[in-house]
Amino acid sequence: MTATRVTPATRPSEGAGATKTGPPVNVVGDAAQGAHRGVQARAIGVRIRAAREARGWTQTDLADRTGYTQATISRWEGGHRDITAIDLLRVADALGVTAADLLPKAHCAPEGITP
Image (tube, rainbow, N blue to C red; front, side):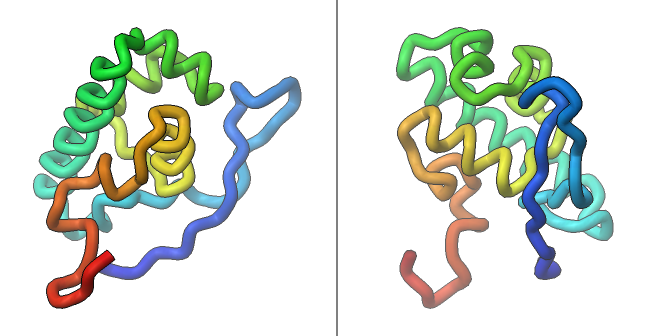
């Protein structure tokens, strides 16, 4: 996986006149990984959904707690939209888990390194 620079981003849903700054950063890989990225996006989505449902929350509940729309939560959970590192951190914080808990285990730490 190629290293990517994470830049802060503000989402339009974060207030009137807010604009998005910096390109989105895909935490599941780069464009060269193609179909593999889609599989990883779905795996992250499954973990987000499981953590949300474990709390008895609806997608709207999670959206309210993160500032994203219900449609965005749905796209992430369905693997139809990549999630950025910043977005993943915000979702994990709202769910009371770590970002690593939401990533497929192969993405948590390089071989031989313990988190």
